[in-house]
Image (cartoon, rainbow, N blue to C red; front, side):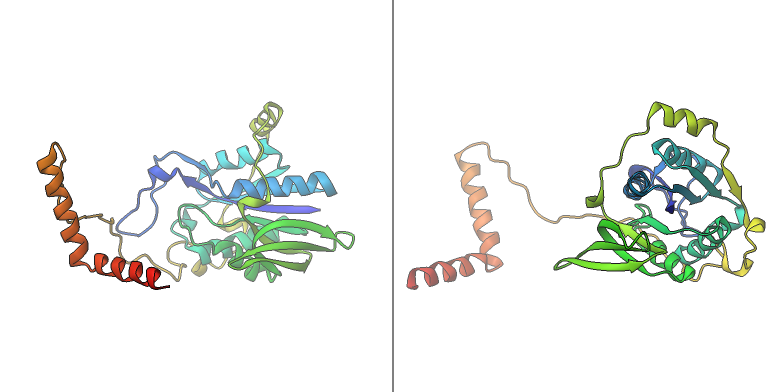
Length: 279
């Protein structure tokens, strides 16, 4: 099986900064890591390769620094890595990103399966996987917790997480799935894997290598915009009473009873209690 895993390099959760003018994430100068939810997709792909044979190709679209994430994927066990990088891609929304990734995957050549993470922790939309399936005209299932290859590797049976429990589906290959944490436990890179990743020459493709419609890439080719950025403020209006002696204890109890009574909580408690006694 030839498996492709789209991954993303994201800022660590505590380091996310936004450009208030463009509404995009500022990636320069911030510590970045592999999107944590993509690690489950990488592990799933490697386990399928180990069980059924084949190869795993990690692909990422981002700045040159995203090479670090791809080398980590190789150190975990991916066979090849492709970096899609070009200043023309800057500011891409999920639609433009999916369009660019789909062109790169077509350039890679025939494949059997695409395994993606549930979502990215920076944008948190969960849209790139489904958008990519639509761009490549593939059958798709999201929130997958188990995968079994059946019918001589011509189809997969999956278990999908839904609100009421789980769904069991069968998809013909090639197909795309997004996976949840339940599917696997990501392995750590090995020393041999790190050595191999350090020496590997990654493929690098820009906009000119992919024969893209320039009106569909980057910020100008993105149909969605962040129109306003605000930092949430948590405010709590109330009073604080410190209990230091019996006098302040009585005051605290009186204020608490007044607070509960003004909001009807005591009356509701009394009604429920009397109802229980009557029953």
